Image (tube, rainbow, N blue to C red; front, side, top):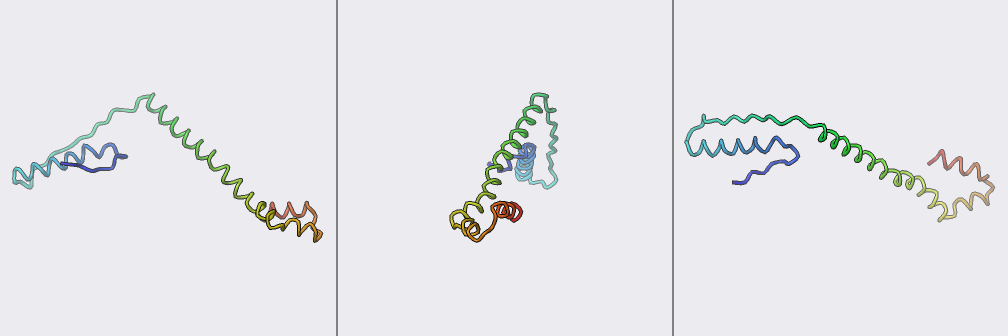
Length: 110
């Protein structure tokens, strides 16, 4: 028989195996009261395993933070680039807007 279970929960495999064996034994013995008890006693996490888990967590956090920086800066730069393409900054400069006022308004608005 095949047992399908969630691989992320390590304690589920023996539990499901026990339930499947119990169902087969009940069927073979023709008894609804037959039970199999399963006890799980995992080994304690060693210091090496704990350090490895901490390193994995630190790498994941570092990777997500480093990955987010280009998207954050790109989101702010998109507006300035689109204004440059549409010549909006040039139009405002010709209309008499000071460059400092343009950049301050761009900073606060975006």
